[in-house]
Image 1 (spheres, rainbow, N blue to C red):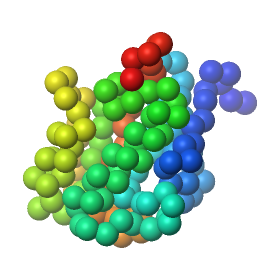
Image 2: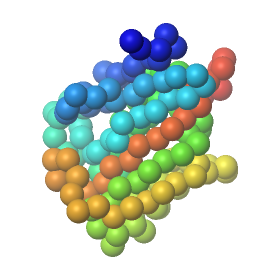
Image 3: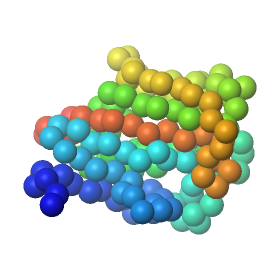
Amino acid sequence: MACHDKKVYQSEKAPAPIGPYSVGTGGGPFVFTAGQIGLDPKTGELVEGGIEAQTRQVFANLSAILKDASSCLDNVVKTTVYLLDMQDFAAMNKIYAEHFSGDYPVRTTVAVSGLPKGALIEIDAISLLCNGDCC
């Protein structure tokens, strides 16, 4: 039996799930995204160009999911970044900073031994829903 206020989100501009999960769910004032890797939503393949290209695609995917859920990157309160190699931290951090301004969300960054489809990075987010025209 599901809670009545739980919502499931899927944007046509973000990749479809590659397993039995939703790319976004919401409950109360929050939207939770599944971890996003640098998949091109049109091809279902990782974008080429290394950590920079994959990080940019991750943010494009997160933005699409949040938009579908009536939210946006400006409303993100928490992220978790999973890196295949901590040597990529500086490059990821530079692109990360381009997508948030002012009051940054809290963040945890961890190194992992592997990611789906051989990705270099994965990011998930928790965001507040917009009340009105906030994004």
